[in-house]
Amino acid sequence: MKSPAYLLRTLAILLAVAAPAAIILKHPVAPVPPDFDGTRLYAWACCLLGMLALFVLAGLKIRGRVLGVLIDERNRYSLSRLQMTLWTLLVLATLYTVYVANIVRGNATQALMVNLDFNLIALMGFSLASFVSAPMALNRKAEQPTNQQNLDSTGQQLLQTQDLDALPTAKGQVLVKSDPKDARLADLIRGEDVNNGTIVDLPRLQMLLITLVVVFVYGAAVARTLVTGGWLLLELPKLHETLLLLVLISHGGYVAGKLIPNNPTPSSTTPAP
View 1 (cartoon, one colour):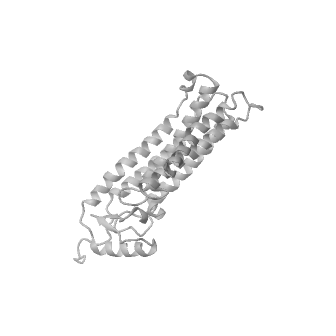
View 2 (cartoon, rainbow, N blue to C red):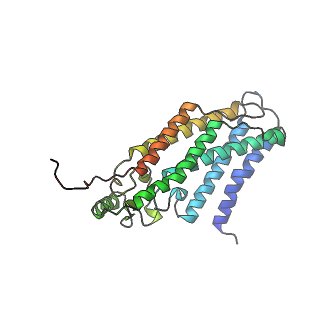
View 3 (spheres, rainbow, N blue to C red):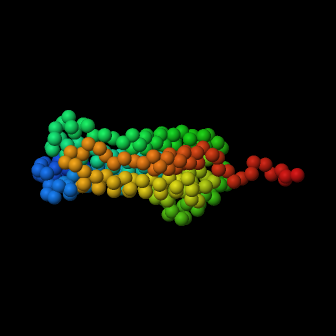
């Protein structure tokens, strides 16, 4: 007998892969009026929901949390993981829907002629670079000695305010939670070391807000293009250079914030002259 988890994964795959193709195959004739094409939009929505379900099932299987794919090795919700997940879902669902629609409505050669915006590719490269460089930047803080007094104070505050199951520990100056169940959404905007783990980290907050805004705006542009685009869609919405620069600045501040030591304890008790 097949397990419920296997059946759920199968349903998610069918929703992500088979349902969009079935929706498009059901309407192979140009719509009337020709300026509204809801078929691609419905297929795109199904693909997004199916891929999101796969991510949720993977998180439940591996980490035991609905948003488990966003939990890193320190048992905290990771901002770089969130960003990569959002762009992966949006871009892959869009490409799959457009390719399938072009194959049904044209031919395989035309389906592969979709023009991807260079700025969009660069933005996904920034997301990948942050995902790779963020742990490398934290390694510098992990090699520093642990400030036990700050760790005790920060751990007790987090234990009470976030209702954790166990007191957080530290690897060097980097906070580590004991279990994935202790991950909280507040991790996305709070500091990551023993000195600022209880306060809002402004570079992280800025990157989170910019990411959500850009993903939402680009997703809305994709939805409009799918509805009002031509019968064959050979070009995705373009991402303006201003948005790309804004994202680049937020990525730079995010990674730099991990590199800069955050130690409010003075290094010396000698009074100034």
